[in-house]
Image (tube, rainbow, N blue to C red):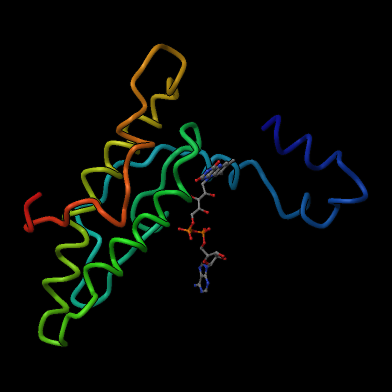
Length: 136
Ligand SMILES: Cc1cc2nc3c(=O)[nH]c(=O)nc-3n(C[C@H](O)[C@H](O)[C@H](O)COP(=O)(O)OP(=O)(O)OC[C@H]3O[C@@H](n4cnc5c(N)ncnc54)[C@H](O)[C@@H]3O)c2cc1C
């Protein structure tokens, strides 16, 4: 509510944008979201905020979307049309545990507030991470 008020006061530069922002939109943007049951429906699959929206307190939303894209590309590489369903399932199975962990940790809004080992977040390499079902 405070944020919306500030934006409305920032005239004239952001006048049009400020009018488009209301309290409800800001609350939606910052809202906690739990992992979805599935990211897939037949040959349609989601990535990014569409399947794992998260609070911004770990600064991992866009990073996670990029990781999704890299893993999805790896899963689809050299797959024939009869392998697409399995490739999309592998993508989801590879990515969901990590994004679910980040969603949960980010919702707590305590990241880096205390001594912690951030390696599990920053040490992840989407181009080399083992794909689900393919072992190490
Ligand atoms: C305050 C704040 C700070 C953040 N800081 C960071 C940070 O430091 N680091 C970080 O990694 N992440 C950060 N994030 C998160 C990051 O912005 C998002 O996770 C990221 O933008 C998600 O990308 P996306 O492509 O999945 O979705 P979006 O960026 O939301 O892109 C979806 C696009 O689809 C368009 N669209 C929607 N519906 C339709 C439709 N029907 N037809 C056509 N187009 C449509 C939308 O207009 C939008 O352009 C922050 C978020 C917030 C709110």
